[in-house]
Length: 91
Ligand SMILES: [Zn+2]
Image (cartoon, rainbow, N blue to C red; front, side):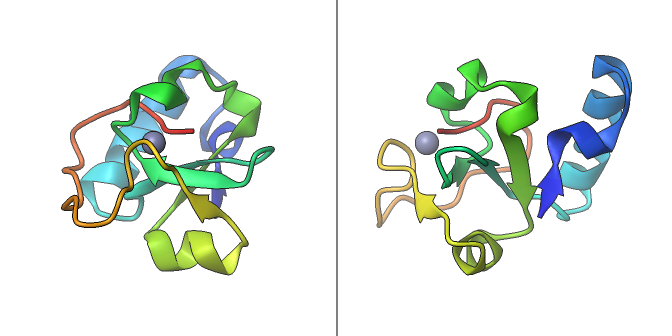
């Protein structure tokens, strides 16, 4: 699990490092630390999340291991996993 705030001290460095991790596949899932919910990086509900509450996972298994549950909005079963281009985060 990676905390968004660990990725850098400025918004710019955080975005840059985050993009790199998404491109390499080190991150495919976003989550909310307070609510313990994870979802796709594209989910529109995640955009309002505070940076301090935002975490990232390599995959769903990792999120589940940390006790997170799937977002009902974007992770309904039978929806294929989304790509890695988006920078929206999920609640
Ligand atoms: Zn979602």
